[in-house]
Image (cartoon, rainbow, N blue to C red; front, side, top):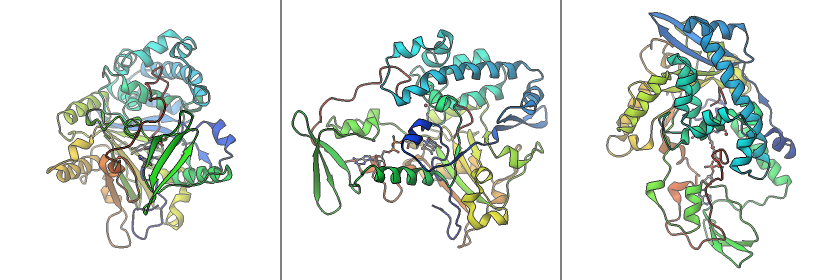
Length: 445
Ligand SMILES: Cc1cc2nc3c(=O)[nH]c(=O)nc-3n(C[C@H](O)[C@H](O)[C@H](O)COP(=O)(O)OP(=O)(O)OC[C@H]3O[C@@H](n4cnc5c(N)ncnc54)[C@H](O)[C@@H]3O)c2cc1C
């Protein structure tokens, strides 16, 4: 769906890349979805000693990738360290990815399937320690680190190791960790899933919140309101697709604000007349075809986390930009012929709490300004100078703070949770049996 009046671009406004859906599952469900590889994995514009450059990681990696690391760091050391690190990650991915399609293994079983050093580096200690040991360059460190932070508000040294789980999610998909672009946008994936479910005999009972209720010892009742009256269904098993925090409420544990997860992502979607230029002189069609990192040097990531934790919008906003329409021009419809492009910005370390209360709107404006500066920035030409105008004469820019991700019209998310759910059903959900159990590489969203 296009957020811009009269502009028929099918922009994936929230999630946009696919990696964690196992190919075996897609084949089993006969999903009619085409996923295309991006020709650029990532591009990181930088300025060093007054010189503008860009760290390029191609897909597949060739000589320009090696040269790019050498131009930034002055030797092949970081390039070699990176190759070693991701070879290790591939070993881990080969062990973990198949578990997404099998009964949950024990932690011990998974640990025994991988090298103990990899297990330590990625699973049991903070990735900050591993990255600082294995890499020397601040920009290279940052590019590696972002996989642990996209979707997680944490320091790279957070003792909770929530960032490890995020890291693994980004590196294991289908044993390669590649993130591919769904042709037609993310809606093409959900449409295909809906068609598969219908073929399998799905009957929709949506529009309304559900509450599991206690049935007999071998049954459960789900109660929901369809807008006009209460409905219920008794069945042997209830499968839930809600977040663990929500499920606990539905099972009658009460609403615990202290453990409520808080989103921390700023999303800015653009429709552009043309792609912005780069100070490095790189071809924008190469640089924007993968994940373009902005303000994501390792020290910048940690500084942004510290500032956001103290209630401040980060001075240098860490974020990533990606142009879907370079991989899939079909989403532009007739706009493709006019040279238009979509662009999506994914900002890190912007917890929802920054945007609450009286100063919330001003904080959002500041975050959007820092994420997509009006003035020409030092590394990428001004994105704002390239923004198209919609049918009503407004600039095609849409910004969503975390609160906005869950309050679209029609959502039945946690903003609409039932205050006092009924009774619990069967067994309570327990923690995953190993850190990778509930978890999901490189150059992703
Ligand atoms: C900005 C952003 C970008 C992202 N980009 C990507 C990406 O490119 N690729 C990717 O793979 N992942 C991405 N993710 C992560 C991805 O969106 C989530 O991992 C995924 O949506 C989780 O799916 P889910 O079905 O587990 O939960 P959800 O998508 O949260 O679904 C839970 C559903 O349950 C409903 N619900 C809640 N309570 C009730 C109730 N009482 N009764 C009935 N229904 C209820 C909710 O309304 C919701 O529809 C992104 C996330 C964000 C925030």
